[in-house]
Picture 1 (cartoon, one colour):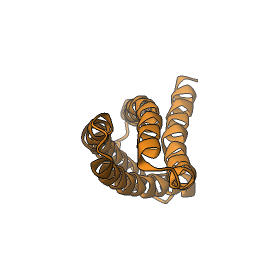
Picture 2 (cartoon, one colour; picture 1 turned 180 degrees about the horizontal axis):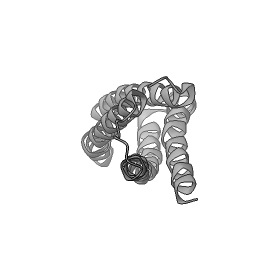
Picture 3 (tube, rainbow, N blue to C red; picture 1 turned 30 degrees about the horizontal axis):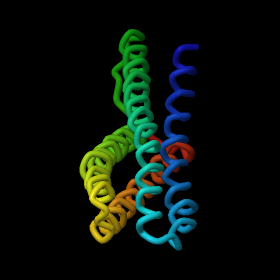
Picture 4 (tube, rainbow, N blue to C red; picture 1 turned 135 degrees about the horizontal axis):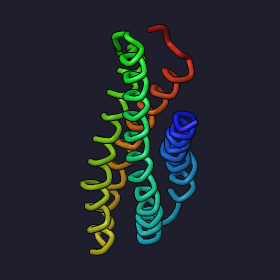
Length: 158
């Protein structure tokens, strides 16, 4: 029962994270593109600030539950007299998940900080540059997230 609950939390955290990136990248960004920078940039900063707080929690939940589930399976195998070898798909998901967390750290603690400073200074040119950089990194993280989901759903052998 505990494993199922942690697996559900794991999946829900990923839904928040990847789903939020899809929303921001494909729906919010194009909708606000027509706004002038003095309106668009503070709006995006406010929305992204809220989203990044949720992603910080989601990434922590994803990492903690993923590692716990791996550890639980490894423990059960070893206690049953077997030798645990992590499946390649789990290794790939773990590595890509950690990469996503590192990219998110750059987005949140470097690029978003620069965006916020530009918005506070009403420096719309610098703010637009930071938002564009942020968009590129979110796009990369979204692509990685889709790969992780495909690996999980397709249940690759191994």
